[in-house]
Image (cartoon, rainbow, N blue to C red; front, side):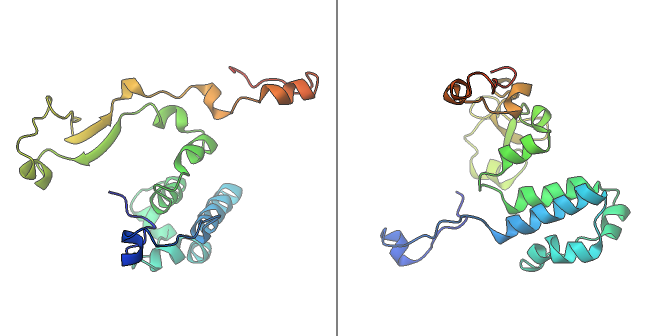
Length: 181
């Protein structure tokens, strides 16, 4: 169960808790800044990392992300910045739009949606009655397949939303429909 941003007080358990609506998170501002700096310059300094991503990592006692670490481990800097964003903003509704903005949705979205690793883990021991291939489907690495690739698609037209018909009509055809819609 996802418990991100949930109030764990007794008031919340008795439906008396209050929740603030998050218009924007400072973490998202820092992540988008790091991404923009890298996209603009083709690189990002360790000083800029310390002003952005490393502020987020330090609050949860994670080691600093540095250019030396990325280079030493043969990582792709842009992928690491995007990974930080994916992890920090998980379950907050950013992923689909990020994939569209990065123009990677066509390759990422049609992949099978995987869950936890089941085969050879404590989950398989805890639920011995679940039979792989019968009760649950797993991939070659033992991860549960929550949704198979055959049920998922992303077409090039999905990078843009359709223009509402009313807007096209109001402009007397000056605005046209996006391709594929």
